[in-house]
Every structure is written in structure tokens, then in C-alpha cells.
Image 1: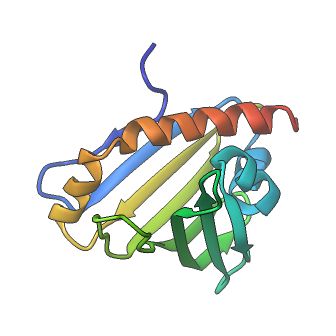
Image 2 (image 1 turned 180 degrees about the vertical axis):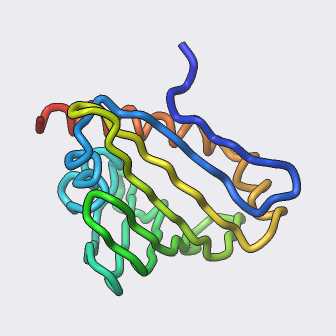
Length: 160
């Protein structure tokens, strides 16, 4: 079975467009991106901060079994329209042992109702350069995102 999360990357463009349809009502799909407890479950990370509002901010952190930080990211929420859209920045912080550096990226998340029980997420991610976008694509980004979206579907469907 192919991946349900689709990633489009046009040559020479500084962006990715990610789409995924979920067997979830629009309100639950949106909650999965706005409520700290739900985000932590499907992302498998610690939500240190998530102010789901315009001019809010967020910070996530993942640690290994010994408590060492292996991933930390943060950003600012520029636009927050419930059940419709979230515009935010995403910045991956340097972590010990990491040689990969990424510039801040801008993310536009749009949520669409398809039926009473299905919805769609469209993410447009804009990178500082084509080279940085291509660097992300060389990582196991697509597989990781698809796995995360599969977890989102599983976790949130149990809330329905």
C-alpha cells in the first residue's frame, strides 16, 4: 500500500505542498494540531508550549530513554482560524551531535471539510532556498511524515 500523505516538490521551487485526507471530522483534525495533549500523542514528543492563538508560540522536544534531547523545535503562530487554518514558523534547534542545520521555514496549514466524517489537510512549507528544501527531501522526511499522519488518524479516531 502506498503512502497516504502526498508530498509535491516542483523543481526549482522553495516549497513543498503536502496533502492528506483523513477519516476524521474537520473539528477533530483541527484539534489534533491545536490541543497540546493530542499533539503530544500523535507526534510522540513532549509539547513544552502550544499557545494556539494568533501571536501564540509553540515548542516541542523529544528525548531518548536517558533523557537526552534528540529533537527540539519551536515557532510562532501568525494566524489561527479554528477549523480553517494555521500559519506558523518552524525552527529546528541545534541538538547535540547534529550536523544538519535548517533555516526557519514558514508553514501554511489549511483544513477542509470533505464530508461529515472526512477532512483534508493541505500544508504548504516555504523554505529559505531551493537547496534547503532539497536537503529536507534527502532525509527520510516523507516516510516520517506519513507515519506521523497514520498515528494522528489512529489516535484521534479513538476520540471520535
